[in-house]
Structure formats: structure tokens, C-alpha cells
Image 1: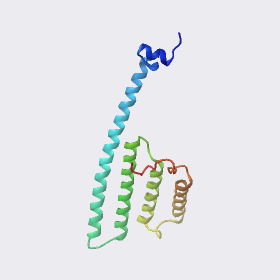
Image 2 (image 1 turned 45 degrees about the vertical axis):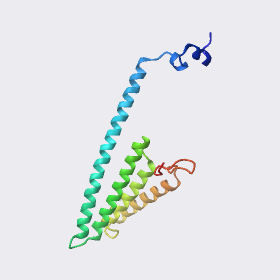
Image 3 (image 1 turned 90 degrees about the horizontal axis):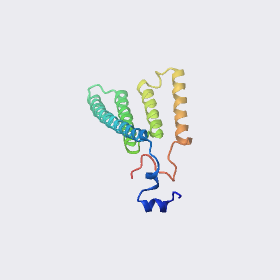
Image 4 (image 1 turned 180 degrees about the vertical axis):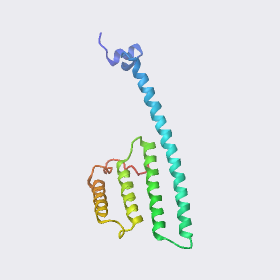
Length: 163
């Protein structure tokens, strides 16, 4: 007697149910689901903490902008810091939605963070070797973002796209 889909329908059990189950596979599935749920909770808490940090940074930026002695460098650095936090928030939202980390968003965050550091220090005050290393880093990230297989193709849904 062969095990066919017709035979499985006649007995009322699916072909998968007729296979012999190994007891520890259900434990692995339960542990995997528990760990995924725990990671989701951690990511959600991290998103809330980042949101609080964004509100605090925005408040500090407003205070610096309204201070009697306005420092453009500090205000711009705070604004770029808020943009980095926004991108990190976006990365966490993508993780919670798709359960994977978006590499293209990570590259964008690294680009903004590197440019923030250079603008915070000022181009004139940065040592030549450090400026060369930062320039090569930004170029490498730009090339990776443009020519690497990091961006979603036309046929695939982009990570930042709304459904």
C-alpha cells in the first residue's frame, strides 16, 4: 500500500500528519517563537527609548537656537543627530515589520553620522589623515549604496515603501 494524497484523504489525515514526528522539533519551534517575541519586545522598547532621545535632542536644539549666543555648529550638529536618530527609528520599524535589518538604511545612517562628525568638528579643524579616512569611508559607503546589491530592485518592494 502506497502513501499517496488520495490515501491520506481517505484516512482523514494529511500526508504531513502521517509522518513520524520527532518530539524535540516542537520544542525548537516553541523556543524560536519565544526568542522572536522577546526580540520584538526589546526592539519596541529600544524604539521608545530612541523616541525619547529624539524629543530630548529636539528640545536641546531649540534651546541652543534660542540662546543669546547662537552657535550654528551646535544647532546643525543637533539637527544631524536627530536625523541619525530618525534613521535608527526607521531601522527598528523595518525590523519589527519584516524581522530583518535593512542594510541600505544602516549604510545611510553611517553616512549621516560620518558627515555629522565632520560638520561638528569643522573641516578646517580636522587633521588631514582623519579627513582622508573619512572621505574614503564616505566614498566607500556611497559606492556600496549605489552599486552594491543593497537597494531593492524595481521588481522588489523597497524597504522604506509603504504598503
